[in-house]
Image (cartoon, rainbow, N blue to C red; front, side, top):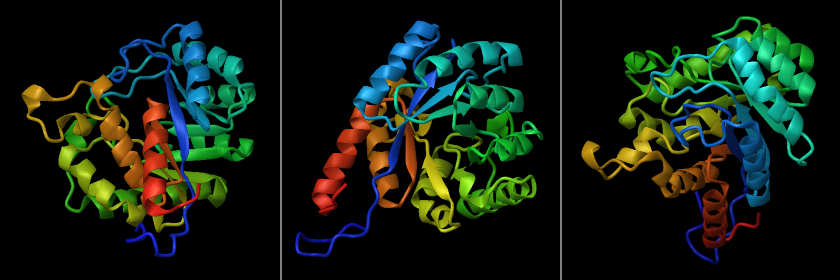
Amino acid sequence: MAPSSASATPTAYVRPLIMGVVNVTPDSFSDGGAWFAPGAAIAHAQQLVADGAAILDIGGESTRPGAVRPAEDEEWRRTIPVIRAVIDLGVPVSIDTMRSRVAAAAIEAGASIVNDVSGGLADPEMGRVVAQAGVDYVAMHWRGHSVDMQSRAVYGDIVAEVTAELQERVEALRAAGVAAERIILDPGFGFAKLAQHNWDLLRGLDVLVALGHRVLVGTSRKKFLGLVGRSAQTERPALERDTATAVTSAYAAENRAWAVRVHDVRSTVDAFDVAEALAGWTP
Protein backbone atom coordinates (compact mmCIF):
# COMPACT_ATOMS: atom_id res chain seq x y z
CA MET A 1 0.00 0.00 0.00
CA ALA A 2 1.05 3.62 -0.49
CA PRO A 3 2.58 5.59 2.41
CA SER A 4 -0.10 7.30 4.51
CA SER A 5 1.70 10.61 4.90
CA ALA A 6 4.47 12.67 3.33
CA SER A 7 6.79 11.73 6.19
CA ALA A 8 6.38 7.98 5.70
CA THR A 9 9.08 5.95 4.00
CA PRO A 10 8.09 5.39 0.34
CA THR A 11 7.21 1.81 -0.55
CA ALA A 12 9.54 -0.02 -2.94
CA TYR A 13 7.94 0.47 -6.33
CA VAL A 14 8.61 -0.32 -9.96
CA ARG A 15 6.45 1.53 -12.46
CA PRO A 16 4.58 -0.96 -14.67
CA LEU A 17 5.27 -1.02 -18.36
CA ILE A 18 2.49 0.15 -20.65
CA MET A 19 1.57 -2.19 -23.50
CA GLY A 20 -0.18 -0.27 -26.27
CA VAL A 21 -2.84 -2.15 -28.24
CA VAL A 22 -2.88 -2.21 -32.05
CA ASN A 23 -5.95 -4.12 -33.24
CA VAL A 24 -5.50 -4.94 -36.93
CA THR A 25 -9.08 -6.20 -37.13
CA PRO A 26 -12.29 -4.95 -38.75
CA ASP A 27 -14.46 -5.85 -35.76
CA SER A 28 -12.68 -4.80 -32.58
CA PHE A 29 -15.03 -3.92 -29.72
CA SER A 30 -12.77 -1.04 -28.65
CA ASP A 31 -12.23 0.92 -31.85
CA GLY A 32 -14.56 -0.53 -34.47
CA GLY A 33 -11.78 -1.38 -36.92
CA ALA A 34 -10.11 2.05 -36.98
CA TRP A 35 -6.65 0.49 -37.40
CA PHE A 36 -7.54 -2.33 -39.81
CA ALA A 37 -5.69 -0.83 -42.79
CA PRO A 38 -1.92 -1.49 -42.49
CA GLY A 39 -1.03 2.17 -42.89
CA ALA A 40 -3.44 3.19 -40.15
CA ALA A 41 -2.14 0.45 -37.85
CA ILE A 42 1.47 1.53 -38.36
CA ALA A 43 0.66 5.20 -37.74
CA HIS A 44 -1.27 4.26 -34.62
CA ALA A 45 1.66 2.21 -33.33
CA GLN A 46 3.96 5.18 -33.86
CA GLN A 47 1.60 7.41 -31.88
CA LEU A 48 1.32 4.90 -29.04
CA VAL A 49 5.11 4.87 -28.69
CA ALA A 50 5.22 8.68 -28.78
CA ASP A 51 2.61 8.70 -26.01
CA GLY A 52 4.68 6.43 -23.78
CA ALA A 53 3.99 2.81 -24.73
CA ALA A 54 6.89 0.56 -23.75
CA ILE A 55 5.54 -2.46 -25.66
CA LEU A 56 3.37 -2.74 -28.78
CA ASP A 57 0.83 -5.57 -28.91
CA ILE A 58 -0.21 -6.39 -32.48
CA GLY A 59 -3.30 -8.56 -32.93
CA GLY A 60 -5.26 -9.79 -35.93
CA GLU A 61 -8.12 -11.65 -34.26
CA SER A 62 -10.95 -10.00 -32.36
CA THR A 63 -11.64 -11.73 -29.04
CA ARG A 64 -14.75 -9.75 -28.10
CA PRO A 65 -17.66 -11.89 -26.86
CA GLY A 66 -19.34 -13.61 -29.81
CA ALA A 67 -16.51 -12.96 -32.27
CA VAL A 68 -15.92 -15.48 -35.07
CA ARG A 69 -12.30 -16.45 -35.72
CA PRO A 70 -10.59 -15.39 -38.96
CA ALA A 71 -8.75 -17.95 -41.05
CA GLU A 72 -5.13 -18.48 -40.05
CA ASP A 73 -3.83 -17.07 -43.35
CA GLU A 74 -5.96 -13.97 -42.87
CA GLU A 75 -4.62 -13.43 -39.35
CA TRP A 76 -1.07 -13.78 -40.73
CA ARG A 77 -1.84 -11.28 -43.52
CA ARG A 78 -3.16 -8.72 -41.05
CA THR A 79 -0.36 -8.86 -38.50
CA ILE A 80 3.01 -9.82 -39.98
CA PRO A 81 3.44 -6.83 -42.34
CA VAL A 82 2.59 -4.46 -39.48
CA ILE A 83 5.12 -6.13 -37.18
CA ARG A 84 7.81 -5.84 -39.84
CA ALA A 85 7.00 -2.13 -40.21
CA VAL A 86 7.08 -1.24 -36.50
CA ILE A 87 9.92 -3.42 -35.28
CA ASP A 88 12.37 -0.49 -35.51
CA LEU A 89 10.34 1.89 -33.32
CA GLY A 90 12.58 1.10 -30.36
CA VAL A 91 10.18 -0.92 -28.17
CA PRO A 92 9.53 -4.66 -27.90
CA VAL A 93 6.74 -6.00 -30.10
CA SER A 94 4.21 -8.58 -28.93
CA ILE A 95 2.05 -10.76 -31.18
CA ASP A 96 -1.45 -11.28 -29.82
CA THR A 97 -2.36 -14.71 -31.18
CA MET A 98 -3.60 -18.15 -30.19
CA ARG A 99 -2.00 -19.84 -33.21
CA SER A 100 1.52 -21.25 -33.06
CA ARG A 101 2.19 -20.74 -36.79
CA VAL A 102 1.27 -17.06 -36.56
CA ALA A 103 3.41 -16.77 -33.43
CA ALA A 104 6.36 -18.38 -35.21
CA ALA A 105 6.03 -16.02 -38.18
CA ALA A 106 5.79 -13.02 -35.86
CA ILE A 107 8.91 -14.09 -33.97
CA GLU A 108 10.75 -14.47 -37.26
CA ALA A 109 9.60 -10.93 -38.14
CA GLY A 110 11.05 -9.61 -34.87
CA ALA A 111 8.41 -10.03 -32.15
CA SER A 112 9.88 -10.87 -28.75
CA ILE A 113 6.66 -11.60 -26.84
CA VAL A 114 3.78 -13.95 -27.61
CA ASN A 115 0.53 -12.84 -25.98
CA ASP A 116 -1.80 -15.86 -26.07
CA VAL A 117 -5.25 -15.28 -24.60
CA SER A 118 -5.80 -19.04 -24.47
CA GLY A 119 -2.68 -19.71 -22.42
CA GLY A 120 -1.72 -22.45 -24.86
CA LEU A 121 -5.03 -24.29 -24.71
CA ALA A 122 -6.17 -23.33 -28.22
CA ASP A 123 -3.06 -24.70 -29.96
CA PRO A 124 -1.09 -27.54 -28.36
CA GLU A 125 2.00 -26.61 -30.39
CA MET A 126 2.28 -23.14 -28.86
CA GLY A 127 4.40 -24.17 -25.88
CA ARG A 128 6.93 -25.93 -28.09
CA VAL A 129 7.21 -22.95 -30.47
CA VAL A 130 7.71 -20.49 -27.62
CA ALA A 131 10.22 -22.73 -25.86
CA GLN A 132 12.33 -23.17 -28.99
CA ALA A 133 12.28 -19.44 -29.73
CA GLY A 134 13.16 -18.45 -26.15
CA VAL A 135 10.77 -15.50 -26.11
CA ASP A 136 8.50 -14.18 -23.37
CA TYR A 137 5.03 -15.70 -23.24
CA VAL A 138 1.82 -14.25 -21.78
CA ALA A 139 -0.54 -17.00 -20.61
CA MET A 140 -4.02 -15.62 -20.03
CA HIS A 141 -6.81 -17.29 -18.06
CA TRP A 142 -9.19 -18.74 -20.66
CA ARG A 143 -12.14 -21.09 -20.70
CA GLY A 144 -13.02 -21.18 -24.38
CA HIS A 145 -13.35 -19.21 -27.59
CA SER A 146 -15.18 -15.90 -27.80
CA VAL A 147 -18.26 -17.30 -29.52
CA ASP A 148 -19.52 -18.90 -26.31
CA MET A 149 -17.03 -18.04 -23.55
CA GLN A 150 -19.51 -16.14 -21.39
CA SER A 151 -21.51 -19.32 -20.85
CA ARG A 152 -18.51 -20.56 -18.86
CA ALA A 153 -18.54 -17.62 -16.42
CA VAL A 154 -19.40 -19.79 -13.42
CA TYR A 155 -17.21 -19.59 -10.31
CA GLY A 156 -17.35 -20.37 -6.62
CA ASP A 157 -14.21 -18.44 -5.63
CA ILE A 158 -12.99 -16.67 -8.74
CA VAL A 159 -9.62 -15.59 -7.35
CA ALA A 160 -8.77 -19.10 -6.18
CA GLU A 161 -10.05 -20.73 -9.38
CA VAL A 162 -8.32 -18.36 -11.79
CA THR A 163 -5.07 -18.67 -9.83
CA ALA A 164 -5.28 -22.47 -9.80
CA GLU A 165 -6.11 -22.69 -13.52
CA LEU A 166 -3.22 -20.39 -14.40
CA GLN A 167 -0.88 -22.45 -12.23
CA GLU A 168 -1.93 -25.48 -14.27
CA ARG A 169 -0.97 -23.60 -17.43
CA VAL A 170 2.41 -22.74 -15.91
CA GLU A 171 3.06 -26.41 -15.21
CA ALA A 172 2.07 -27.41 -18.75
CA LEU A 173 4.26 -24.71 -20.27
CA ARG A 174 7.21 -25.70 -18.11
CA ALA A 175 6.71 -29.32 -19.24
CA ALA A 176 6.84 -28.08 -22.86
CA GLY A 177 10.20 -26.47 -22.15
CA VAL A 178 9.25 -22.84 -21.53
CA ALA A 179 11.57 -21.27 -18.96
CA ALA A 180 9.81 -20.11 -15.79
CA GLU A 181 11.23 -16.60 -16.10
CA ARG A 182 9.69 -16.29 -19.58
CA ILE A 183 6.13 -16.88 -18.36
CA ILE A 184 3.87 -13.89 -17.75
CA LEU A 185 0.37 -14.39 -16.31
CA ASP A 186 -2.80 -12.51 -17.25
CA PRO A 187 -6.00 -13.04 -15.20
CA GLY A 188 -8.13 -12.48 -18.31
CA PHE A 189 -10.48 -9.67 -17.37
CA GLY A 190 -13.67 -9.91 -19.41
CA PHE A 191 -12.99 -13.42 -20.70
CA ALA A 192 -15.61 -15.85 -19.37
CA LYS A 193 -16.24 -13.38 -16.54
CA LEU A 194 -19.23 -11.28 -15.56
CA ALA A 195 -18.91 -7.75 -14.16
CA GLN A 196 -18.70 -8.76 -10.49
CA HIS A 197 -16.18 -11.47 -11.32
CA ASN A 198 -13.88 -8.83 -12.79
CA TRP A 199 -14.09 -6.60 -9.73
CA ASP A 200 -13.44 -9.52 -7.38
CA LEU A 201 -10.49 -10.59 -9.50
CA LEU A 202 -9.02 -7.10 -9.57
CA ARG A 203 -9.27 -6.85 -5.77
CA GLY A 204 -7.51 -10.21 -5.49
CA LEU A 205 -4.67 -9.37 -7.85
CA ASP A 206 -2.09 -9.75 -5.09
CA VAL A 207 -2.87 -13.49 -4.90
CA LEU A 208 -1.88 -13.97 -8.53
CA VAL A 209 1.21 -11.76 -8.14
CA ALA A 210 2.27 -13.96 -5.21
CA LEU A 211 2.78 -16.90 -7.61
CA GLY A 212 6.07 -15.22 -8.50
CA HIS A 213 5.57 -14.59 -12.22
CA ARG A 214 5.20 -11.23 -13.89
CA VAL A 215 1.54 -10.24 -14.19
CA LEU A 216 -0.07 -8.39 -17.10
CA VAL A 217 -3.37 -6.60 -16.42
CA GLY A 218 -5.72 -5.86 -19.31
CA THR A 219 -8.87 -4.07 -18.15
CA SER A 220 -8.83 -1.55 -20.98
CA ARG A 221 -12.28 -0.50 -22.20
CA LYS A 222 -13.84 -3.73 -20.93
CA LYS A 223 -17.59 -3.89 -20.48
CA PHE A 224 -17.46 -3.96 -16.67
CA LEU A 225 -15.88 -0.48 -16.80
CA GLY A 226 -18.72 0.69 -18.99
CA LEU A 227 -21.26 -0.55 -16.46
CA VAL A 228 -19.69 0.70 -13.22
CA GLY A 229 -21.97 3.31 -11.68
CA ARG A 230 -24.38 3.05 -14.60
CA SER A 231 -27.48 1.12 -15.56
CA ALA A 232 -27.34 -1.16 -18.59
CA GLN A 233 -29.30 1.49 -20.51
CA THR A 234 -26.69 4.20 -19.78
CA GLU A 235 -23.54 2.09 -20.12
CA ARG A 236 -20.47 4.03 -21.24
CA PRO A 237 -19.50 3.15 -24.82
CA ALA A 238 -16.04 1.64 -25.31
CA LEU A 239 -14.36 4.88 -26.38
CA GLU A 240 -15.53 6.59 -23.16
CA ARG A 241 -13.94 4.07 -20.78
CA ASP A 242 -10.35 5.35 -20.81
CA THR A 243 -10.65 7.27 -17.53
CA ALA A 244 -11.99 4.17 -15.79
CA THR A 245 -9.21 2.16 -17.43
CA ALA A 246 -6.58 4.56 -16.10
CA VAL A 247 -7.93 4.22 -12.55
CA THR A 248 -7.78 0.42 -12.68
CA SER A 249 -4.31 0.60 -14.23
CA ALA A 250 -3.11 2.74 -11.31
CA TYR A 251 -4.64 0.20 -8.91
CA ALA A 252 -2.80 -2.59 -10.75
CA ALA A 253 0.42 -0.61 -10.42
CA GLU A 254 0.01 -0.34 -6.67
CA ASN A 255 -0.52 -4.09 -6.55
CA ARG A 256 2.77 -4.79 -8.37
CA ALA A 257 1.57 -5.59 -11.87
CA TRP A 258 4.45 -5.92 -14.31
CA ALA A 259 2.55 -4.23 -17.14
CA VAL A 260 -0.87 -2.94 -18.14
CA ARG A 261 -2.36 -3.41 -21.59
CA VAL A 262 -4.28 -0.32 -22.73
CA HIS A 263 -5.77 1.27 -25.83
CA ASP A 264 -5.20 4.88 -24.73
CA VAL A 265 -1.66 5.30 -23.42
CA ARG A 266 -1.78 8.98 -22.42
CA SER A 267 -4.48 8.61 -19.79
CA THR A 268 -2.64 5.74 -18.10
CA VAL A 269 0.65 7.67 -18.14
CA ASP A 270 -1.17 10.54 -16.42
CA ALA A 271 -2.71 8.19 -13.85
CA PHE A 272 0.69 6.71 -13.02
CA ASP A 273 2.25 10.17 -12.72
CA VAL A 274 -0.43 11.37 -10.31
CA ALA A 275 -0.45 8.20 -8.21
CA GLU A 276 3.32 8.28 -7.87
CA ALA A 277 3.37 11.98 -6.90
CA LEU A 278 0.72 11.40 -4.21
CA ALA A 279 2.52 8.36 -2.81
CA GLY A 280 5.97 9.88 -2.83
CA TRP A 281 7.28 7.28 -5.23
CA THR A 282 10.07 8.00 -7.66
CA PRO A 283 9.52 6.34 -11.09
